[in-house]
Image 1 (spheres, one colour):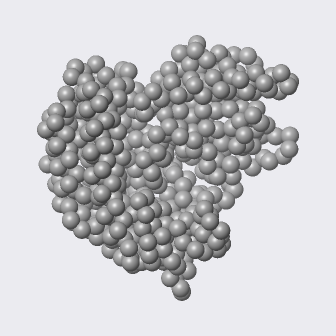
Image 2 (cartoon, rainbow, N blue to C red):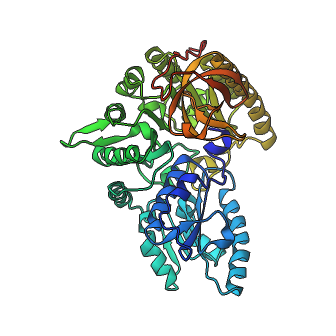
Image 3 (cartoon, rainbow, N blue to C red):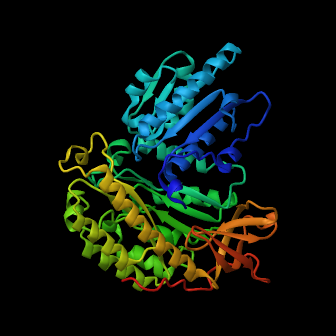
Length: 491
């Protein structure tokens, strides 16, 4: 997964979204969905397409052909809302052109920007017919009906239990064949209130789906062709769901249950908080072959002073001890991380503490950002905001160090044989692409009928962000890894 895919606002119209449309009749209404930001938004967009499919909508990649346009927005990146308004300006012209041709177009804004700025969106962009937050997409038919009647809809109430119940009802229905890898939301919201973050305000408090809800959806996904599931949550390892007997499960126990599902061969989860890495979850990395040797574990800063100002409630030494415990349980694991550079009050020494942490841990990859103020968060009103040129220089230095570690990690894969889930066609004829256990893209020469299978692949060449390999004869639909993947170095 690239830096852009992780959090930068970007088009994410996926084959899964398009394939979810069962109604492809020529006269069917068409929906254009543009998704910005994180994996949870991608998951939400796919579920919105599921809902709209039952209402007679089919997906289109051309906005000009759409009867309904939905922007599923993200509020994490700098100037996220301004990017939405800019896109709405372009949509206004298309809507006007369609009106001149006697064609209607409805426009919706969903997601975290909608949650944070619902009434403001309606005021600034009159072309928008409905605004709804991330907890309301299951009500799309009702909201569309209101908007079709001429009512401007702004729906930003938190009703996450109803959303989860809808997901469970949807999971009981048959669907078209899905891609080999998919996301599954198990938890939403966050109670941590880091001083730089808007998630508690746009997604609400931490809420976990029940074991039954998750297992039912995972079984349905496996039955429709999914072989790898990534469990999603704003703070996924804080998940504590209710089991059948009323007892509370943790994420480690849930992973063990999901590993029992026939056809479901690979498990991942993201994004985690260091404070919620329970022992049973770490032991799952030791015990489960289905749990891939990759963990995204954001630390944000290597300075105790800045960590305290961020309200992270862990120290750098806490992080070092946790990493050592994880690597003792799973020596082959690849760690990735998030870093924020230039948080208010960050000194040169604070920044060097972060660089020291990176050198000591040795990451396989990382995502790094300059701090940007988020209205409504404590960080936005802090004094000692770091000058932009200082943040830029520090970010460049940090990213050069991370890039060198990623290159070294990828180079350590060369010559290994590992399992690769083949997911799609490659750029070139006769090429297919999949994911390694450590989440790198792997390109190999092979026929398209390999898509959906797990193959033993020898890594023969590396690039900055991907690997290249060759199929190992006689190992069709290979399960498990033949290499321990030990990263080497680090604490």
